[in-house]
Image (cartoon, rainbow, N blue to C red; front, side):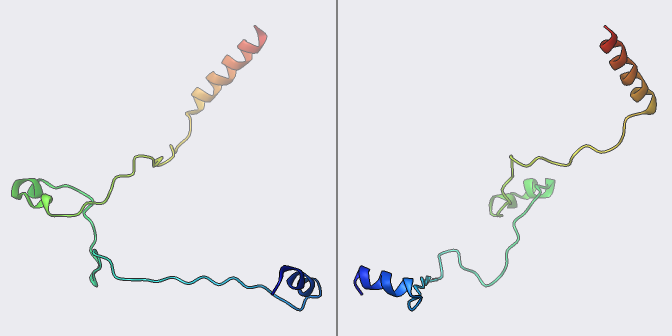
Length: 91
């Protein structure tokens, strides 16, 4: 349809435009029916036998933050920091 007619039909709500997407999926060179879990640790046995050269390893994530620190301050350390703050405010 020409743009003018299409705009008129949209304005009268007689036309609804729908966008559809389709994908083609093919088997790649690394396709396998078995699920292979990559190794996460390097053991002394792997180094001794040399089997680590043929094993896939899980990539290391250098941007992970790790566990947050847990626990609490000792009560005497809390008192000491409060007193220090009071003295600093007094000058």
